[in-house]
Amino acid sequence: MPVTRVMLEYVHPWPNHAGLFLARRNGGFARAGLDVDLLSDGYDRGGAPEVLARGEYDIASLRLGHVLQSRSTGTPFVAVATLNQRQLGSVITTASTGIARFADLEGKTVAVPPVARIIHEVREAVAADGADPALVRFADPGNWEPDIRSVEQGIYDAVMNVRAWEPFQGNTPLDEVVVLEFDSVGVAPHHSYFLSVRQETLERNPEFVRSFLSAASVGYRDAMEDEDAAVEAMSWPMCHVRPDVLRASLRAIRDSWFTPEGRWGEIQEGLVTSYTRWMESGGWLEEGSSVKDLQGAWTNDFLPR
View 1 (tube, rainbow, N blue to C red):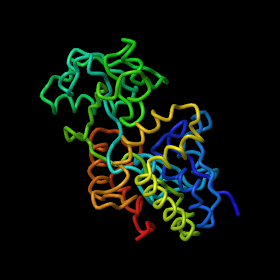
View 2: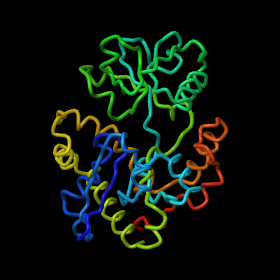
View 3: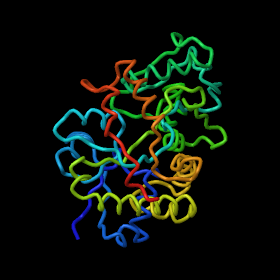
View 4: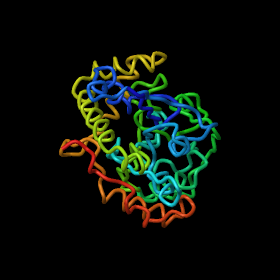
């Protein structure tokens, strides 16, 4: 059978992908007639949107902005499932810094990627928590993505990164890790990542998409219900990471996989619409994109019933 190539959303696998790796390890993809290769890479050849557009991959995990940008190109994408029902970006620190809420970032130095949208989101969260965002000091880490170790070492007071991975890379006891979630102050709630395909793939081979999503759905449900199996599945692509770190990350991420009603992959129209409007109002959509590009950009029609 031909190999189905899936580009993951980061430069290495992490427990957000546990359902995919477990579906492969348990034979779920094989039973669906699929030989699935789950891949990560750097960005020097282009990120996930570029390699998906070039046809080098069949499926890619993308952010909403990438899907919307593609809609006005010759290779439009369609989001066919979401991996996360909530946003994963958070401000991460330790209890020893005295930071317990967004308002406590006043006078502190926070490492934030040099992306206007992300910097604004932090400022908006500080304001929503009743403090003055002008008093927050932002540090640009460049290509480096600092985790909690940079807080432990005193380089920064806090870092902006993924709530279910970067908090667990250091030596801070879990009960002393502080994670400030933007959803907690109602700032820009959204789905984090979408499994996406080229529109021509959806039109040419819809059963392929259905089969992949059906097997993935079972994989994520198995990962939710069998923690040991999920950790074991991730220990192969992440053999360089301690099992207790994998377990902590898995426990932090798995609540984002399903809707409150227990459905995997379901894209919420309200979330994609409100987030697109938020990005459009700030000028953070990719050039040429607008809320009108949501038409046809996503669907739940290929998810298992």
